[in-house]
Length: 56
Image (tube, rainbow, N blue to C red; front, side, top):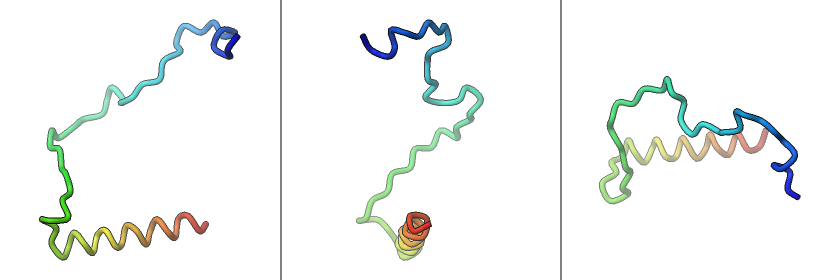
């Protein structure tokens, strides 16, 4: 028997997206081919921030 078989909960779902979240409807995709200098600097800052966060 699995763990789920022992619980009798009526609200046992996990919402994937909050119902009150608004979207601007714009889907942005990054392409290295079309990246400019600002995009590359932003990526470098993001990588540095991730490294700092992992160290703590």
